[in-house]
Amino acid sequence: MKRIDLKRAKSQIARPNTIREINTQIVLNYVRDLAPISRAEIARVTNLQRSTVSSIVDALLRADLIEDIGTGDSTGGRKPNLLRIRTGSPVAIGVDVGPVNTVVAIADLAGSILDKEEFSTSKNADKETSLIISSISRFLKKYQNDELEVGLSVPGITDHANSSVTYVPYFRWHDWDICDRIENETGLKVTVDNDANAIALAELWFGREKIRKTRNFITVLVSEGIGTGVVFEGQVYRGEKGDAGEFGHMIVGSLAPVACSCGGFECWEAFASNTASQARFESALIGNGSKSSGANVIELALKGDEKALAALCETAKYLGIGISNLIVGLGPQAVVVSGGITQAWDLISEEVHKAVEKSIRKRLPRTVITASSLPSRPTLIGAVALVLARKFAAAS
Ligand SMILES: [Zn+2]
Image (cartoon, rainbow, N blue to C red; front, side, top):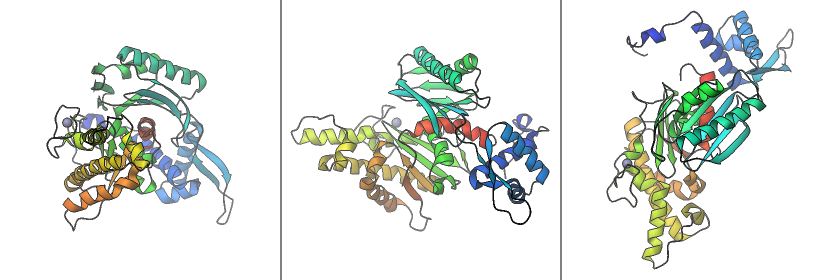
């Protein structure tokens, strides 16, 4: 039960159509999870009046969000018409801004990508904005749907509540006006979040079934740095100012193999990121009298290179130490790891688990630690999920 915040009560007061909106989202969620499902079955599982269900279903059919797929088995009387989420109909434009390239994609309500464009991310914020808007405009010409909205995943600090981007450290962009520009020039609503939160949302809506049914879990994105997303009671926890989940900067040791993005040598990110694995591998080569190769440490480990494997296992040990701290502090049901390192999950998972088991108190319930099942660019699914979560969930 939540204590009511009187400062925010004005914006939370129930408007006459609030109940209808909530019921619509509940019906949409039942169609998503239990399809194919009939109107009668929805009325039975929700305890809503049959006429209320029919009127909500009609509105969802008109909005092209669900579809009628014909008749099912009868339990007596007339055979019922069955419903499911409408696939193939464009409802979300996901914009995933990465440090190297940007992907703009259009997706349906099931999160399937229908079409996408990819380009190198410009180091100039204005140029990047123009490239994104041109791409969205091309999609708008090709796919018309009143339901279309934009979800934007950014590798930086964002203000989710006010749809703004505060800072992108990689390019040193301050107060990037991308959200306002998209809204003004295309008329589409924009929802923004940082890449780690977008991934957490993607796991919640499109991850493996076990994770989707979990109310409390943490996502750990291992890339050039480490980003974490916290899902608490079925929604992403963003903190008072939207800056929660910066566990990449928790201190796990001293004299890390590389500097953290904040400049320190004590942060988790400096011990357990891909940059750390690469640095460990390169210094083992140099220590051995060989020249730095620049080859990808994960790919080499998968091919059986012993030095690469040793570097990766050392990184996995630190990944496990950080995960162990998260488990002790927050008690999640699961921790989901994503990023390139998960390609080598079979090689490193034992090391990760060993570090966790060593430090966790024995009698705590065992937390599931698993590699993400999302496609290779989880931040793109995250960008799409930012839109879809708004359609399925009340005020996420
Ligand atoms: Zn740091």
